[in-house]
Image (cartoon, rainbow, N blue to C red; front, side, top):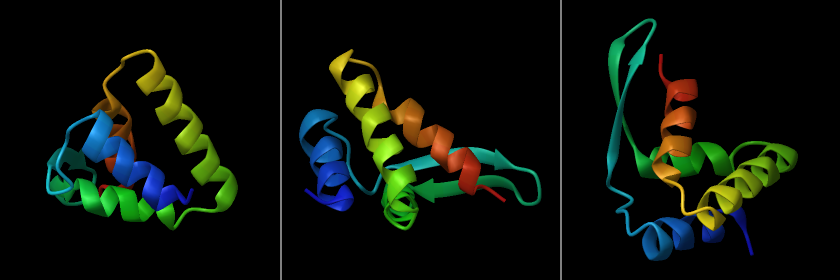
Length: 82
């Protein structure tokens, strides 16, 4: 299974979240950043394979423990924010 397939399935089926969902985070340069979940998925898919695997492992553990995967996606959004 590819990273994109895993993330899409997790978001749509398990978390019941839309790819159009936006996450608002403060950036150092531009202030408020509004980042769609689809852009966060794209960012993860463009990371090196080792980092993608770490993201999948983290999300799997969060899902296994019935945690909120949006916290992880917000963490990635903060990384992206300018």
